[in-house]
Every structure is written in structure tokens, then in C-alpha cells.
Amino acid sequence: MSSPRRHLGAGAALSVAAQGGPLLAGAVLSIVLAHTIGPSGNGRYVLLLTLVGLTSMMVSLGLHAGITYEVSRRRWSVGRAFRTSYAVAFLLGLLGILGGFAFYVLTRHTIFGGIPAWVALLALASLPATLAYEFGATILLARERYEQWSSLLLVHAATLMLIGAGLTIPYGLSGAVVGIPASAVIGALLGVKLLSAESRVDTTADGGESLSRAVRFGLQSWGANLLQQVNYRFDVLILGGFATASAVGVYSVALTLTSVAWVLPQALQTVVFPRTANLDEAALSGEVTDVDSDESVARAIRHGVLLTVPSGLVVAFLLLVGVPLLYGHEFHETVPLGFVLLPGVLLLGISKVVGSVITGRGRPRYALYAAAISAPLTLALYFALIPLFDEWGAAIGSSLSYAGGAVLGLVFFRRATTIGLRRAFLPTRDDVSDYRTAALLARERFARSR
Image (cartoon, rainbow, N blue to C red; front, side, top):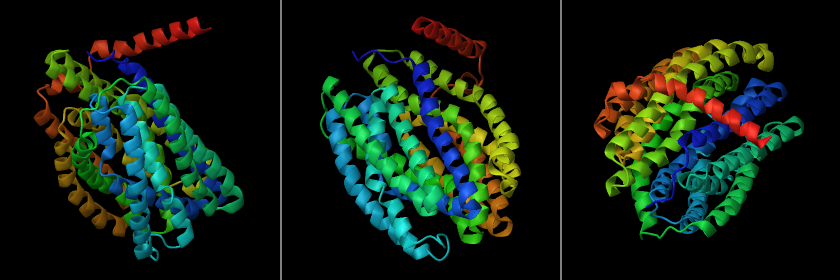
């Protein structure tokens, strides 16, 4: 029998901090950039972050999902997963530096115009450490070590903010970029410390060929994730090719603020994926029933639906109050752009939780199918709208793309499970009362700690 499972609510609560911390750090950094190097400098920084993020995704081979799946099913020990993933991260990271810089060279007069080659190379140099830190985080999450996992993400985000913001003031864009590799290295080193401690208490026996199984599983998710980047990242790159860096900077702030709506659903998604995989394995072994497994994931999706309400209200407040107060008149267009993005963002938040259930049930190919359908349609929207309407075309195209992805996720959810739509998407009174119960428990725990 496996070890007792952590309370999913505790994991989700810590995940909120882990997901919200990087967003807060990114927002603080963007405010500093806005007031020191303006919308154009902010736009160039976002383009470099996008280049690093896309390159990391391309060379990762989907191992984030594969590692999580294998470790959460107790088929790969922490020590071996840790050592193997860090070695693989170094090799894949070097490949990413070469490939990412080649793309920069090809587009340095269009998308990356005004960005020196050495600055782009400095950002890309973070890739080996970035992959190592991310792989380490997935191992901790798969083991339900929520505290260690969240601390790793928060330290990485805090380092990116402090170094980036601190060096932006005297050195401009190049100073901000220093924070990218610095935060990656510190994250990777902290991962070594946390995983070394976890490996000493892990009793998992390797099932053999764990890396090959992780790669086979991950490649299916990898294809889906690559295609999904068309929805998540290509709007910025295509906008950078057709519009000014200032337009990219204004639009990127709208993206940052509306992505706050993903904090709560994504926190739930993050912990639901390994839990779904673990419960599916337990159902196969007879440790739990299929009914119990289904109810657990259905309840998680219903909470994802409920969380769209506070998420939408928070984003609306940030757009109406935060932008004028913190960014100034140069970013006035960010407010309506954000409200164009918001409906699609909220629908995609629910879809993220649904997707984690589908993948956790061992059906990553469905995410690949959905992405293969949505990616060409999204590209068509971007190339039709962005050349004509610049940042407005990017916002409209992205919102429609997010909504379409949510519909496709619903279709494949029906194929991956036998859970009825009403059961999965219509919140109950008990679901609402969960929050009151959680608040009471938190208050009691705080009182005891005092």
C-alpha cells in the first residue's frame, strides 16, 4: 500500500502561493521596467523571456510530464530521477542555447530588432539551469512535497525580481536580463539541496527503464505543449514582427495582469495531475474504487469552475485600478486590451484543470489532438488580425483561441472519462461549503499556532 496522500486542499493552497509568487514578481519587475526603460524596453525584455520559454519547451521533450507521471506512480525513485533529470537538463540546455541563438540570428532585424546579440545569448545561457530547476520541481510535486516545491518556485521568482529590478535601474535592459540566468542557477542549486534530502527518505524501488518510459509519456505531452505555445506565446512573437516594441510592451502588461486569473485554477491543475495519476494507479490495484477516483477528479473540476468568479473579479480590479496607478498614462491601452482577453482567459483556466485530469488518466495523446486542431486555427487568426489591428488583433485572436481550446478540452474529456458533464462542471452546495470549512480549519490552526 502507498503512503498516505496529502490533503489536496493543502496542496492547492500552497500552489496558489507558488503560482502567484512568480506573477507578483513579474508584475513588480514589469513596473520597474515601465518606469525605467519604458514600454519599448519592457517589450524587448518580454520578447527575450518568450524566446527562453519557447526554447526551453522545445528542447525539454516533455519530460516535465513524464517525470511527474513516473514518480507519482512510484515507479521511479527520487534519487535516480534527480540525478538523471539534472544530467539530461544539462545536455538539452546546451542544445537549446544553440537552437535559440540560431533563431535569434535569423530574426534579429525583425522580431528582435534593437536587442544586442550578447544580451540574447546571456538570456539563453540560463537554459541548462532552467531545465534542471524545472525537472527538480516536478519531482517534488510528484512526491506531494508541496512545501518544498512551492519554496523552490518562490525562491526562483524572488531572485528573478530582485536581481532583475535591482540591475535594471543602473544598467537598463541588459541588467534586467542578468536576472534570468541568475535565478535559474539559484533555483537549480536549491533543487539539489531539497532533492538530496528527499532521496534519503524515499523507499521507492525503481521499476527499470524509468527514463525511457518518462520520455515516451512525455513526448506525447511535448507535442501538445509545443503546439499550445502557438496559443500562449506566438501572439507576442508575431506582434513583435509587425508592430513596434512599445505595442508589445503595452500588450504584454495586459497578458501579465489577465494571467492572474490562472493562479487559482492553475494551482488546482498543478496538484490534480499527479493526484489523478496516483488515484488511477490505486484504482487499478484495487486500493480505491473507480467511483472514488472519479468523484475526486470531478470535484476538482467543479472547484475549477467556482474559482473563475474570484479570479475574474481580481483581474477586473487590477485592470481598472492597478494599471493607471502603477503603470501610468503610457499604458492606458492595456485596460481595454485586458478586458478583451479576459473571457478567453477564464475559460482556459477551467480547461487547464480538465487537461490535467485527461493527462493524469494516461491520455496525453488527447491533449496532442486538441493542440493539433487549435494551433493552425490560432495561427490563421493571428496572421489575419495582427497585421491589420496590431495589439488589438493579438488580443482578439488570443481570446478566441483560448475559448476554442476550452471547447476542445471538453470534447476530449468525454472520451477520456465516463464522468458526466453535470457531475464534473456544475458546482454543488457541498463544494461551496468546502471553502467555509477550509477557512474554519485555517483559523483553528492559526489559533493553535499562537
